[in-house]
Image (cartoon, rainbow, N blue to C red; front, side, top):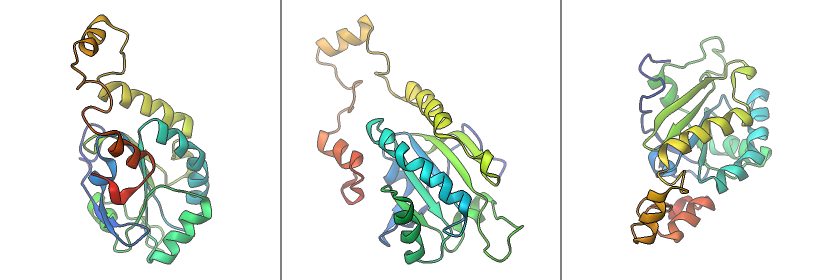
Length: 206
C-alpha cells in the first residue's frame, strides 16, 4: 500500500463500471455520507464470498444509518461480477476493475498469485469526502473487519461528521426553534434525495 494512503488521508476518487456497466465515481456513490468500501479478489475467492455474506444483513443497518456500502472486484467481466453480487444476495453497488486500476494506483497487487492477478483485499471506512477513517488489510480473512467493528467505526465517524449527533443541548434546541435547521439532517437536501440514496437508486443520485 502506498505510504500516503493512511488514516486521515483522502482516497483517490476512482471511476469504474458498476454491475450495470455504467461508470460511477466513488464520490457520487458516497455523496455526503460515511461509506464502507470493500476491495476484493473476485468470485473465485471464498474469503470474499464469506465477507460479503456477512455484509448482506449489515447493509440493512447501513441503509437506516445513512451510510453507503460499495464493493470493488477484479473480476474481468460483467457476468462474473453479477454472479458474485447476486450469489451472495447483495443489493449495493459493485464495481469491477478488470484493468487493475486501483491495484496499480494504491500499489496493492497480490504478487503471490500471478495466475489470477488480484489486488490485496482491503476494507476502507470513509468519512464524507473520501477521507480515510480506518483501513483493514484483508489478505488473511481475520484481517477483515467484523460487522461489530464496522459498527464501532461508523459510530465514531458519524459522531464526528454529523452536527446533530447530540441534539439534547440548549444550543441545538434553540437553533431548531429559531428555524435555523441547516445543522439538522438532511442538512438542506430534499427527502427525495435522501430516499433515493437509502433505496440505492444510483441513477437518481445527485
